[in-house]
Image (tube, rainbow, N blue to C red; front, top):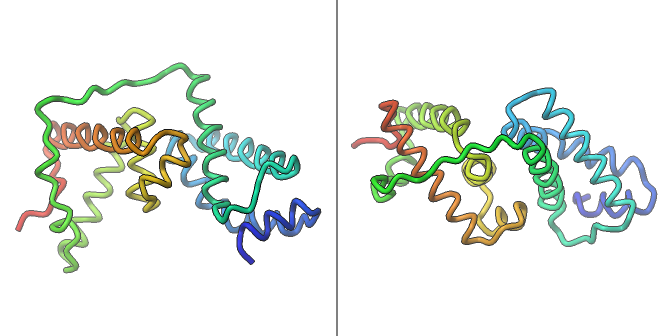
Length: 193
């Protein structure tokens, strides 16, 4: 059964269907939350709040089988995370640097299939993950969804509740900031031939 079918079964009173939904989606959802908040206890709290909201909305009939249960679920988690960030009132703002240039990123070079490139790519992703911790939350979220969850910008915009252009802009500023941080820390983000 699909997640959507399980959700509809739960709405009809089948608690086992929800148990299956939770088992299928908890790791992906928790990973997303943990990546955003960087704290196990806070992530656990947000995860629990998210599933309480999911249960409540399902029981209130606020879910329609649109074929995108995982995006609907991630959207709820996103909103809970944003509420948590607002509560903290501790936003970091990183301004893009006019000297940064996106034209030097060569995706084709990064995706080489030989083992040496794979090792370099693994190290690049590790470096990117570390640098992403210094990005403002909206930029960090878009990069995570795009690079680590392979979501399209349309999907990202639906989950985060912003336009595609805003998602693209956040990604652009994130890349500018990552390039600046890489340059400051002498980290190579592309494979040289």
